[in-house]
Image (cartoon, rainbow, N blue to C red; front, side):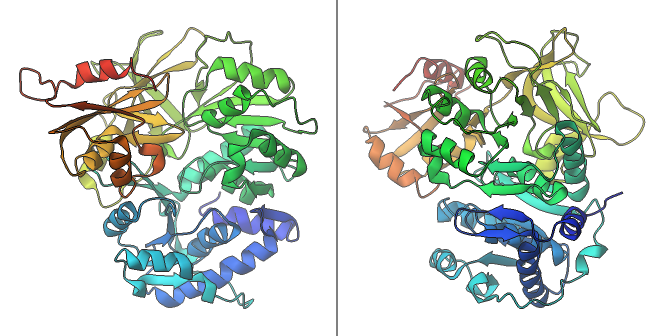
Length: 506
């Protein structure tokens, strides 16, 4: 029985030390090379930290070095928290203030950016200065148990402070063992990674590589802007497995380029992170009729995914693609408003129980208590379930169908976003008195309604928001109001504004 995710890596290293492990477009590293670099980083982390089981921030782009840093942190007996190098420094500063990491692994150039934003350089471990000296890998990791954290992923927070979701070793082990078995992944698998390392979808790519001896290609971000080049890259690297967000697959299908590249070898095509349209799925299926297609679902708080649907029948273009059934060792409760199990075809909130649940939100006991609650169906002993805030129902085939968010949290371009976080940022723009954000999921538009004395240009608002939010969270529609509508209790009439936002277009 595995206790620590490093056991995956070490077993694979023993079997295939010289096999290609990771490639980032610049360098190709074998498992032995990856271990050597991870060990060097681990020794430096040990030298700089007295205690174990602490968060170590990793502020690096998606590269082999970032993956080696994750492993190095784990070998040091700690857990890693990847940070987005493309995010505004203000957001990174807020995360670091909340996280209080023992160290920040970064480069000299990126460290200078953090320092200019007010981060203390004494907390940096500059990886440019860490040589590959071939020494022994520290053994502090062997003292960790399966309920200790392996990583923290930060998601959008309604208060303006991103939430740090703490994932334990046992959650990753459950997930990877299930995925390896259900999708029959082995050392012949060649993975084409799309997900950023700050996005929990990357967990599947990364740990299938470690557990199965699969080769992981980190696809350069810029290739996703050019579908033909992207597909040529997949063909050139003999990629046979992808796990992408649907928006990327939709973009490729819309460009009608799937038939332009003949040497594609895709055998397993997985997707998750947002709703996949059956229309675009059917375009992919017609191009790869013998491939396995699977729709996965799950919030970050349950270790990536908790349900899956292997596409096993023809779907009409207007049908909803099911999210399927629970993954192994997870259970799905769909609860109605009376906290009772919903009947077939009855909508309710999707709730999850099992060892895949996160440990909670880092340094946020109150937030944790709101989302991780006692199972209302079990009055006999303590048992957490996670209330996802998503709505869905069981269909008559025994499959779960996703309906959407119960609240104002959205999934946009594969990212989970709290509309409240965008509103929080908008209210920091000079001249704006009040605001409301609405989302049109069909058109994938984030609409801003704002109240100010005079109309502000979209360029002015965007420029200010870019210092506070990632690009994927910026509004695309701007609506000025001298006075926003209120309901009888004096609050902004959000329902009417959201309804109005559904009719907007560019």
